[in-house]
Picture (cartoon, rainbow, N blue to C red):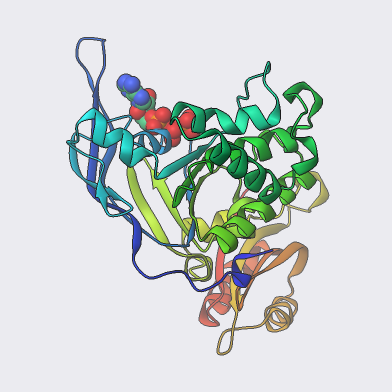
Length: 345
Ligand SMILES: Nc1ncnc2c1ncn2[C@@H]1O[C@H](COP(=O)(O)OP(=O)(O)OP(=O)(O)O)[C@@H](O)[C@H]1O
């Protein structure tokens, strides 16, 4: 399932951050760390939004601020129309029930069955027994684990444990689900199944999902929109198709990375290596046109990849061109709207 098959999101913002700043004062001589610097972000209801960024970019701080675990130094945060800032503990606890959390590891209670793990937050919330039983059955069916209700976590695969973690996060039927690296510990096939499940949940429960991830494949597979966090700032954000089509942008660069090549397989004594990036939509150059131009310029395609995101096809080619001709080749490609840059291995 992909973002392109998503249903129309319900109108309105589920999450809104305005000018959110977080400054930590470290124990070490009171030095300041600016973890978030004026973050503005809107995630519409029913949307799946990805947040990517390098280690230390501020992703965990953002999540902690969203869940009210951390108070921002400045700015405003609203989740489900309620401010997460300046609330008393009681109100904050109530606001938090509108947010489910899924982590990299499901962190299940090993001594309790699958059903008891899912029931745990509902017991804490003192729901009537019959209601808990009904919800647990419903949630286990939703995540495809009805037949494992009496199993213990040690009897489950990594993917099944993550399903239980998701069911537990949804126990209170929260309108927002925050997922922090939900598939980083899973293999490729299990990742795909968990991503399919998240898409189903969005369609079935109309839940808004924010995924923090370092895997661009996760963003490609299920996100409707994405933000890139860098040193506490959102430096690029938008619908997936829009950021992917911005071939000079950093997100497009990461969504369709340069093919991996080894210098020993190329004749870099004689040739220069070019990184060509382009989109194929009506009015823009198509893949075959780029290949034709490369060959006209005496270039050799060493490797390449094409990805389709929405209605846009993205191409990325590694092309070698004789060193003496590389400047002219770059000019010729750029004149055709193809981003051409020399790269060094
Ligand atoms: N409690 C804290 N006290 C002081 N500095 C902190 C604290 N928590 C985080 N930081 C700093 O804030 C910055 C952002 O950290 P954060 O954990 O939010 O980044 P991240 O993007 O989640 O990184 P990672 O992907 O490695 O988890 C870092 O420089 C970090 O050292």
